[in-house]
Length: 601
Image (cartoon, rainbow, N blue to C red; front, side, top):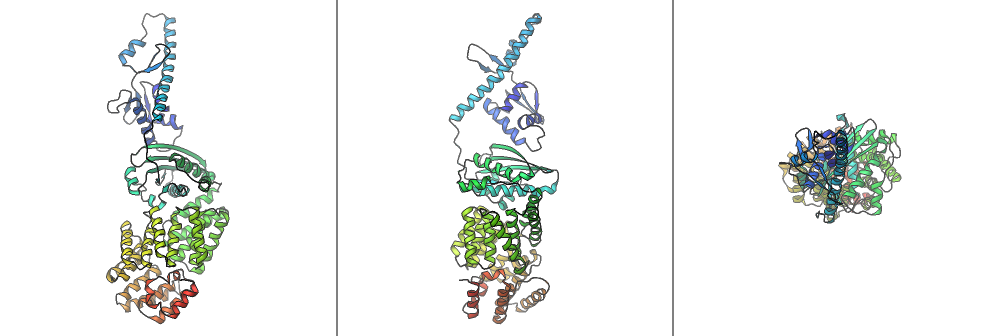
């Protein structure tokens, strides 16, 4: 309506795209508005039944703007005033001023034409309003919106180094919307696969199987931040909502809340009281703390040893800036849990930090699903099984669509031997985050620990196809091949995994297992000795050494290193009851005793 008014006011004149942007969104608009202008022009043409190829009303001046070509006059025949758009010749005849007209008469005529022009504009607006109202009485039926993906927000800041801000804001917005039970929201990892994608919105929506896509941009100038967001129907590419939000960086959590609430209203989902509280929750946060937190998540999402160590530093910076920032404590806990699981740090060094940080996160924000899931993961690594399950269940009660909680809970269920439940949880996590490489890999791990090697091989082959450079997928696929009897393929996959991991001792140990399984015992023993020597300089999980000697069928050294792993509180000892490598030792009393001490079934 505002665009139509502008074009009619400037009838016959070129109206530039810059003028349109200023009129519709205000001065100093520093974002991409091409889509929005095109949508607005398209709606005006639809109302006037105008053909853009042969326009009667709105002409396009390529690269410059638009012009309202048809003259507008007022028809005041009686009390019912309407709007007529007539030909240029008719209008010229109706409004031309005779040369011999007296000056006073010409003044009256000009004044009358001004009144007529204003009346015409108002009448046209009224006519369009009536048309819209009539149309709204019989709206076109639109399918209900049940699923949504937030595409990576574009970084429009002047510094390319602000990329972490756009990625972080994307993740935070997804996190807000994920808690709505009535809406399936694709998780961050899968959405991020389409960053800078050349695919159209309908193509992306089809790939992610969603009804609606959120597009937008982020711009930061000093401590000021602006977000532009718009909703697009996946099937039709229709832009049906767009808005701009400005805030001081200190109020960025309130900004996220506003955007998430607006989106939830536009897609017309319902939510309960707890979900609404989570959606609107906002507090002020120190700009330094928030910036450090986003940098932490940026590096954490790389899932590498170097990335997790950098992330740990940034999360600690965020906590130092704001000791009441619960999300930063959760991030710190996740880093230390990950460093322990992947064997980059010893349990003695990392797990106490992880436990303290997760406990603090829950204490600060007991309604945070993220905090409870982080605590559940640490407790599982500490072999505190009962409390771990309670925390995972609490996380899923608070947010049934938090993919990481289902991902980690599935691992816990595998450890407990509850394989059907484990696979169900892992599959739900993968449905929420279908392109998450770690979640996809761990679905394969669920099959592997259930001794379903064909299912494991199929799943991990799919993951490797998603990203041939993801080390963990090659690791699990290699282990699958060992148990399935494909020794050549196993050695190839595990050698590749060790190379991609940067020489991680945990991965190198699996190469030795493959060598032993292939009958190359001398090479396997050589690698085992190299790892034992390495352990004098850096952390090497004794569980990996126990796996090598189990594959070599060296019973005494197997139990020697299992006892060392128990004393070390090695994280992977949690898998002892279900790890296929130790199947031949399950009847041994020493093995049964270890299971009792770890409290495993």
